[in-house]
Amino acid sequence: MIFKKLCLEDKEIIDKYIYPYKFFSCEYSFTSLYIWKDACDVQYAIHKQALILKKKDFDGNYHFMQPLGYKREDLGEIIEELKAYREENHMKYLFKDLEESFIEELNVLLSEKNGFYIKEDRDNFDYLYEAKKLMTLSGKKLHSKKNHYNAFTKNYSYEVIEINDEKVIKDVILAAEKWYEETDEQDSKLYYELLAIKNIVNNMSLLNLKGVAVYVDGKVAAFSIGESLNEKLAVIHIEKGDKNINGIYSFIAKTLIDKCFNDAEIINREQDLGIDGLRKSKMSYYPLKLEKKFIFSF
Picture 1 (cartoon, helix red, strand yellow):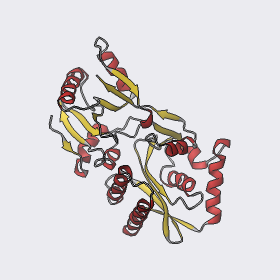
Picture 2: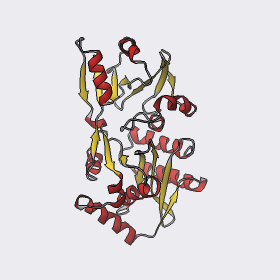
Picture 3: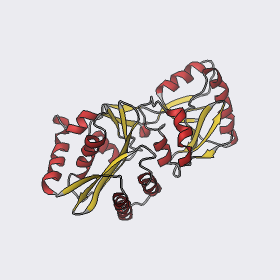
Picture 4: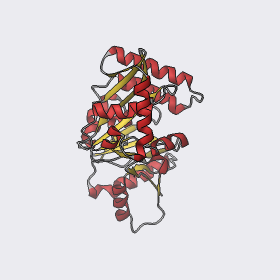
């Protein structure tokens, strides 16, 4: 297998294997792969007419994602070849980012073999929400979010503009750079996120993305970007805001869905990466479900 580093020109090839998009996780969309192509060194190969994706996690451990487009009769042989590749290249895991349905298929295929393990990857679970609840912020559970939203609308003079022209794109990048420079801990994830923001806002149309920027006093106070993956599911890839502005995150979360994804049923707000503050924030919106992902290895 010869692996190639993922680039923008590979979108058509990858999309042939991904769409129609049947997952509820965000991992297998081209944009998700493209956003983290540098941080996770995302690579791919076409082998036995299947798409084989390889990347590393944020701890630097390489692994394969689940093969896509394979013939069922070829799966056993593909796994054996990937297992050999893993051993030759000293990879910690064979698979990560696995869907539950693929785990079931592996269990059937490998039921007579010993020496493999499967475990849940909690830090990588995706948060799924009912779109209508995020659009309305209705109900007792989201009462505090509604209060934050109302506080922003009452106390600030603001404007909401879609991210689709050069001026807004430039303003979004300047805001992202400013917030990155102001962070206390400029870790690698935030650095690569900044690179990703620059890449995707300059290719919104090509990537089929939609996004909005919120201006307060003529400057970008928040922005968010997502995409529709099928008729039911939309995923929010990026959400950034000025933490000094009260209620801005409740406002941007509701506004993006209201303006760009109001026909979706489910909103995927991606994972928390095991970050305590991020987990608390995502749980505070009371997810409908946590979409599980699994690690598999021998």
